[in-house]
Image 1 (cartoon, rainbow, N blue to C red):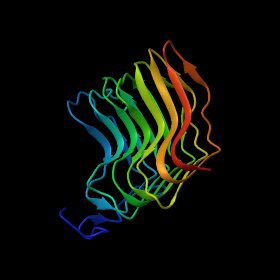
Image 2 (tube, rainbow, N blue to C red):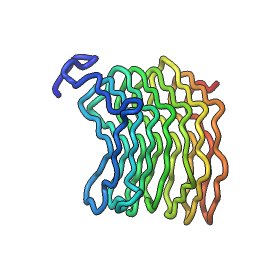
Image 3 (cartoon, one colour):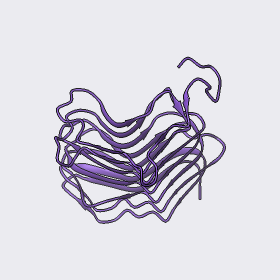
Image 4 (tube, rainbow, N blue to C red):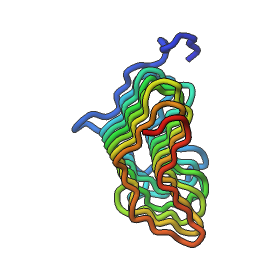
Length: 232
């Protein structure tokens, strides 16, 4: 909790949440809540593996009424490597608050986010929302084979990001490949940023798909944007 060493030695380490054929099911949360709700909340830990879980507050329950996360890891946490693979996340947001599927806001040596599936039921958020959010100083970042499922209909203005990355390091590499953010309906001035990466290190953005985007009045689409020194 108050550990000056790096990598931290007092954090909980090597936490595993979900395994093949042993994933967790988290459903029907966040309805009528006045504060932040999370399907999986990671804090004061390093080297977690969160995989093969089903997170769904949008089916047979009440839509969220405040800030909503599927998988959330804030500061202070991090260090080592993090794996978030093969999760199925579906969110329903009935309020104007944000709705984020995977949200990482701390540092790691490496991040691997792969084969996750994202969907939204009711989506009334007017705040910035993210399917994948990575804002951290990380040497190696791999975001691969993630995809949307069904049709996502955003009914209120404000942006949704398929992937957002910011604040890398001067070393290492970023690989964003084979992701599919498609079948999204933008209504009432809402907007989609398919892939956005801002960092100084070598970045590879390859073989991604952003398609079947329906645009409403005053809606906005930006497919892929890289801000930084090196794009390959």
